[in-house]
Length: 200
Image 1 (tube, one colour):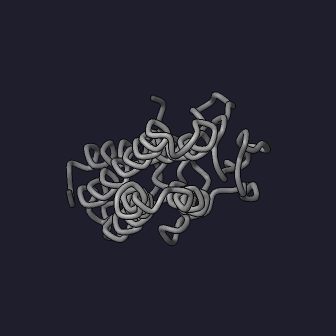
Image 2 (tube, helix red, strand yellow):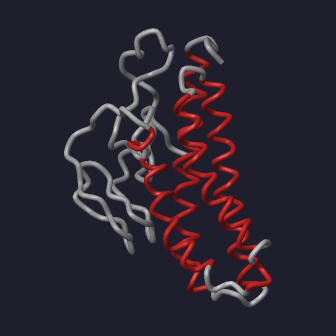
Image 3 (cartoon, one colour):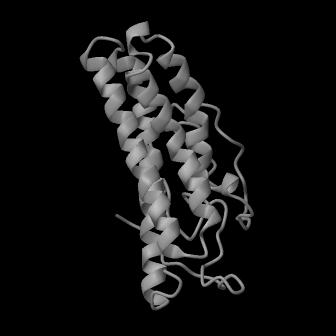
């Protein structure tokens, strides 16, 4: 899986590399949805436009305006995986409302909890980014939650609550979020190894 080495100045006193908007994930030098040098896009993604690409993802929902230059990230809200996972909440909860009352405390509750865990753990991890170990820990939880949402949606299809067509855009969206989070985890691990494991 292609990823870009972390480059640039280290944040003052943090031991962490500067985060940038407009990479695949808008953070520490990750590739995101476009492999380095490939010029290709993810199909069926939800709400994403890469910086300077000039194209939108196929089937995108609420795609953001294209940005022409990278900007330093000043908040977890600038991380694209966070943004995309937030955009997926409304259509997911709309689907959840179609579940029968008997699933109110079962499947519906599990889907709500897992879907909210994705952006919440990205945000919490970003707040602890001075420690690469802590940041990766919360990203691992977030990654697991994307898989949990996908499995619960597939369970909904298996028991007849949803159709495959209904969950397809959501599954594709969470799969993209999962890849973004994975690449961020990998880029942080690489930086920690090069830095000699300082601060986690």
